[in-house]
Image 1 (cartoon, one colour):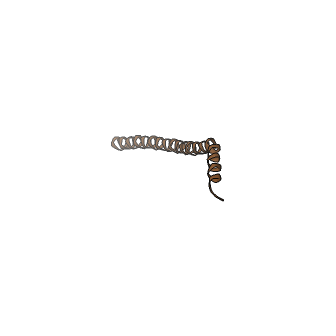
Image 2 (image 1 turned 120 degrees about the vertical axis):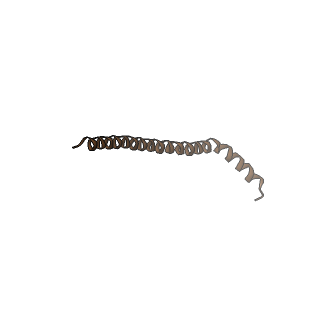
Image 3 (image 1 turned 90 degrees about the vertical axis):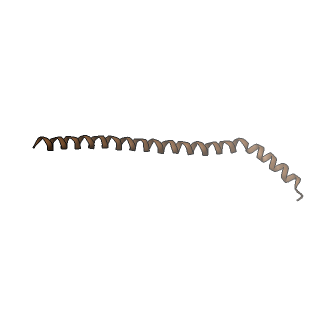
Length: 72
């Protein structure tokens, strides 16, 4: 193998390794992004359920007062 071909092959190998490292990094960041998005939505939904659970007695009181005011 002549030196020029060997040099091109080594450069190709170096580029392939760099690309592989970049692809692994991108995959890792995509997994982290998915996990953080899932956590974000779980937090939002959990907060809404928790707020409803906390406010429910007050809502029941207001609804009972409202229904007692209505003629019926």
